[in-house]
Image 1 (cartoon, one colour):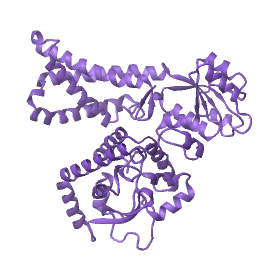
Image 2 (cartoon, helix red, strand yellow; image 1 turned 180 degrees about the vertical axis):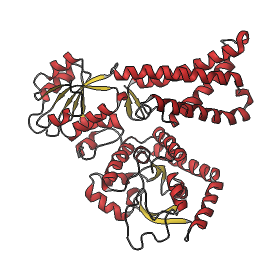
Image 3 (cartoon, helix red, strand yellow; image 1 turned 90 degrees about the vertical axis):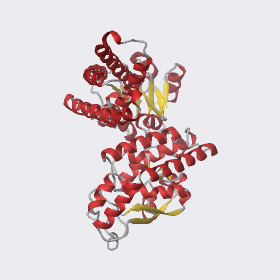
Image 4 (tube, one colour; image 1 turned 135 degrees about the vertical axis):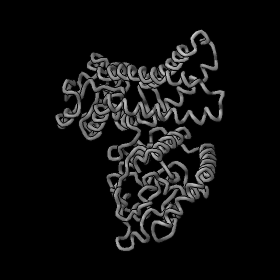
Amino acid sequence: MLRILKQYYPVRNAAFVVGEGTFIFIAVVIASWIVLGNDFIVTDWSIVFKSLLIVSICQLSLYYNDLYDLKITDTTSELFIRLLQAIGTSAILLAPIYYWFPVCVIGKWIFNVSIFFVIMFIVIWRMAYMQILNRGLFDQKIILLGSGELAKKIAQEIDGKKDCGYQVAALIGDEKKRDLQLVIDPDTNCKSAYGDLCIQAKALGVDKVIVAIKERRSGFPTRQLLDCRVDGIDVIEGSTFYEMLTGKFMVDQINPSWLIFSEGFRKSWSKRVLKRTIDIFFSLFMLILLAPILILVAILIKLDSKGPVFFSQERVGENRRLFIVHKFRSMVQNAEMESGPVWAEADDCRVTRVGKYIRKLRIDEFPQLFNVIKGEMSFVGPRPEREFFVEELEAAIPYYGERFSVKPGITGWAQVCYPYGASIEDAKEKLNYDLFYIKNMSILMDLMVIMKTVKTVLFGEGR
């Protein structure tokens, strides 16, 4: 397993991405050889550089067209459609690069011939990879202990994600085992006794034992787990494994001791200074870059409906300090005059015509860049919430108050990983992601969130 941005990924997933990049590179080299003929030189570093540029742009386009989300591209037709979109996007992105830097131009005919080989190689490579996933080759086998909600969630995640890299080889549960068996392979070895745990693990070739047992005061298999650990089998606490697998917590299933003794939650002085520096740089850069768009949006809002251009509201920030957040107004003026504070809904009737579009593209959030410059917010962090809802959510959701240990953000791990939500259950699910971010926050993770946010803005996904 590879650890990237605090999450664990199978080595084969990295091999898949690297292999696909290699095939794209080979496609460009073959096209160069066909077009140039005798003039083609294998050791020509200009060809290598130009080919690597195409590889980088192509794989970036593949990512932004969801071609690395195998749930979306699980059909041949969807794969072809998105692949053609990605190729088109690559051509559009390369055009200005070739215009401004003519030295990077690889040649019109080489590029056109490359397209044929790129599509052919990517399709063949992905078909081969899907065969590997369908057969479970190179999966790590695990034994799952427990049959409560946490064990069920882990089993569902493994069953629903072909490329997670794990396979439940055996399930050892209790009275709820039958319910859990419904979400795993019916051929999985299921038992209700821990006696021969270590022997069974060796016989099945198991790499890890996942302990998702809720009741640990009596009947806990301490001796059996110790034997497994001494024999070289990893024993992982269920909540920790769930975090590794999904990139989020499960607040209903964790206890204070798990949070206290787990790694993470480091907020060093140097990390804070670096994060603040990046916040100021990004905010100023975006305000300058987007100034024409912001002016245009302000004019459209003013023409579309009565009321001010900006909407200002009190929110709860770091250490529970109150501050005024600024956004472009996307709803009618005095939207809560009659109803009072209420959750905003996905298709809220209070949203104006212009507001519908700027909310979808998250343009309404851009004035918060001024909050970032003032130091009240960060570019990446948990979404700032209103004090009225904070009281309600803290009473209903465990550990909700922990999100105030960092500055709120314009965008965040929860916003890019979870769709629009307007309920306590949605707030709980977003907290699962927020706590994961707070525990594992780093500059690299912030950059990943920003990349995902750009994708959201460009394609109007989520909220």
